[in-house]
Image (cartoon, rainbow, N blue to C red; front, top):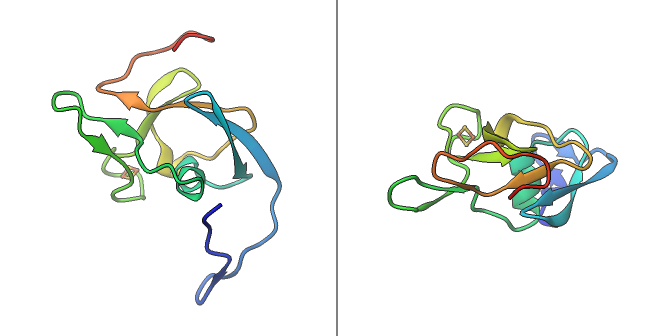
Length: 108
Ligand code: FES
C-alpha cells in the first residue's frame, strides 16, 4: 500500500482496523474511517470514472466533494463522490462509465 505514515503537520499515522472492499470485483484492503478515494490511491487505483461523451478517464481533482470527478458506483448507486464517502466493510465499488446506472445486487 502507498500511504503517508509520517506527515510533518498531521504527525504519525494512527493505527486503524483494516476492512475489505471490492473494486470492480477485486478485493482490496482499506482503513476504517478513510474515504474511498484514499483507499483507491493507496492501492494504486487512480481512475474512478470515464466521461460520458469522450470516454476520458477521470480521478481525484478537488478531493473536497465539489467537482464530481471522483464519482463511482457504490453498492449499486451511481454518482457517489468517493473523496467524501467513507469505506465500509464489504462495500462494492464499480468504475463508472458515463452517467452510470443503478445496479441491482449481483448485477454489473
Ligand atoms: S475529487 Fe472533486 S468531488 Fe471528489
